[in-house]
Length: 147
Image 1 (cartoon, rainbow, N blue to C red):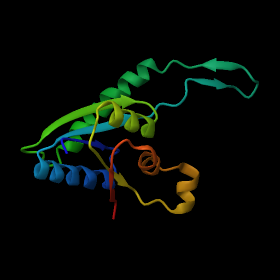
Image 2 (image 1 turned 45 degrees about the vertical axis):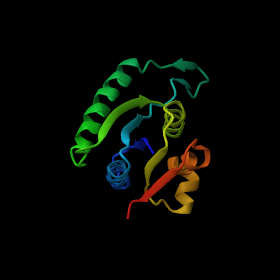
Image 3 (image 1 turned 90 degrees about the vertical axis):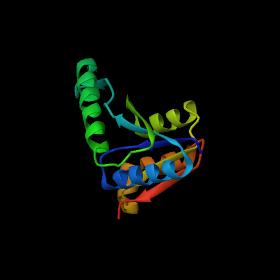
Image 4 (image 1 turned 30 degrees about the vertical axis):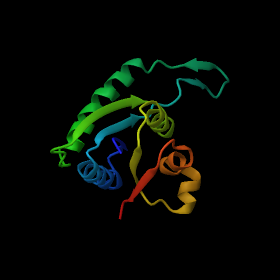
């Protein structure tokens, strides 16, 4: 196991996943890539009068990437990564799609991610990034619970 991907969203579960991934990396001599996905809503919409609108989120995306970079740096200050090769990646898109794409393109051996523990009802309505990644991942997924 040489490459571990860790999606980070700032939750307690992702903090625990980051710590577990670093623990694995130290055991197996792996490199860890910490990934933060910034979700930006669709850039096309319709008003209540049926008028087609296209929004330009270019400047907003740039600011969100800058903020996401600061967030990831700050987040990783609380994880002891000494002795482990790490990479950081900030992307914009749909979280589960970006995670799956990165795992496949980067030929990762393992994904370590957190699960917040939504109830079945809430998970039905809001979806679960973790569940979608587990379903379609090109490699094993180690899930760390928030508890």
